[in-house]
Amino acid sequence: MSRNQRRDERFEYYGCVTSDKICSLPGRLEDISLSGCRIRFPVPVSMDMDNDYTVNIKLSSNESASTLPVLCHPEWNRQEDGQSEIGFSFLNSLSTPKLQSYIRYLKKSSSNKDDIYSLIIHTKPVFVQC
Image 1 (cartoon, rainbow, N blue to C red):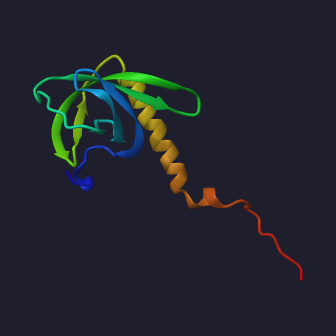
Image 2 (cartoon, rainbow, N blue to C red):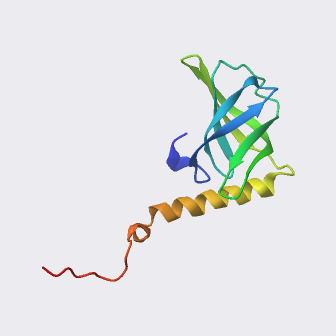
């Protein structure tokens, strides 16, 4: 799905994801939004696309690092170069409020990076005498 057709803004976010029912090896979180995420596993993964899965997303922020269990439903599974890339949609669970709070944190921190005025060191002009 192209980026302009998405319901929610996605953030490129690289983190560690584990789910014993999907793969015994940890996966890498490629991007995340309020409605879902994309995860890459280092080996080909076959899974039942009708089942719901719990994935443990390792969140890292300035305050602390924690693992958040999130209930997901697979939307697509693409295999290439000996790896699997899976798109998940998030389902409501006990950890949904914390996940939404973290996505808002990512949105706020990414908007601060895009602000050109945040790159200015001094707001007042400095005149140099020759």
